[in-house]
Amino acid sequence: SSTERGGGIANTARLMLSDSTLRNNQANQGGGLFSDEATMLSNVTVSGNQANQGGGIFSTAGTTELQSATIANNSDGILNFVATIELR
Image 1 (cartoon, rainbow, N blue to C red):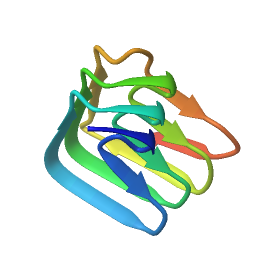
Image 2: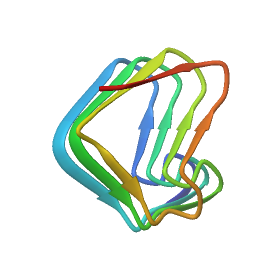
Image 3: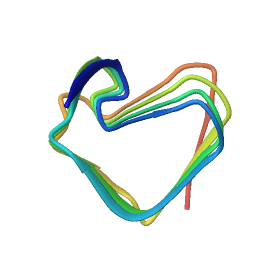
């Protein structure tokens, strides 16, 4: 899919995603995931996504928690803008 924000998911509320894959999406910001709220990804793979900013993930606010997550082979990895990333 292709869009302005969040080719795979555009998150504007609290998001908990598990046991999933976000793959081969396109957007201007956040090819796999665009988030401006708290986000938790558990056992999630974000790969093969493309964006001008944040090919894998574009995070603008809140905390993005990555637990057993794989972010690989995107046009770039994570763009973090005034937000917090926690790796567990």
